[in-house]
Amino acid sequence: MGVLNHDWLEEQQDALALPKTVTATLTNLEIIEANVIVAGHASTAVTLTLPAASYAMAGQDTIIANNAAQTLTVNVAAGFGGAGDSYDTITMIQGEYAKFLCSGTYWYALAALAPAAG
Image 1 (cartoon, rainbow, N blue to C red):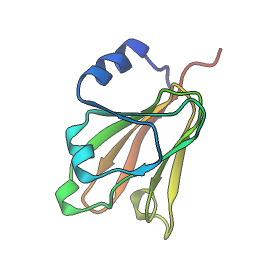
Image 2: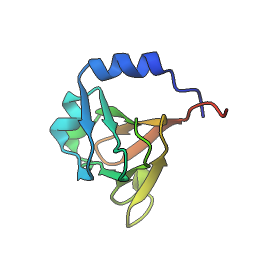
Image 3: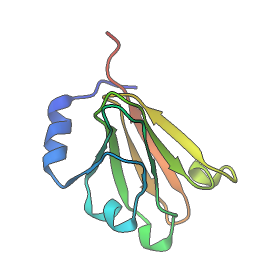
Image 4: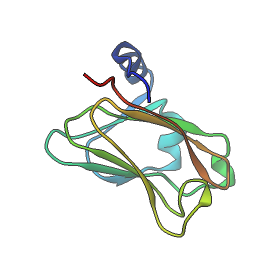
């Protein structure tokens, strides 16, 4: 875990950031076009599900960040790295973010970073 650099996150939000304030399944196009997906809602937890891994998504990556008071959960069907037959999840609190990469066959969580403990 590392320290979330708020200046870096603000720069990323300005560079093709995609806001998400409700639970949704992300599309291939959203992953391809957005540098960062900034999710969260002030009063309701949000769950985002990554699209199915596919050849068309091979090499695609994205950063998903939680910028709200409620938790953000990221799901992937069949588990990260294909380990499992249901959903694997990463749950983030405000200020946390993670980077995800698709191999074309599986999704991988490459890094999950948290704000410094205060």
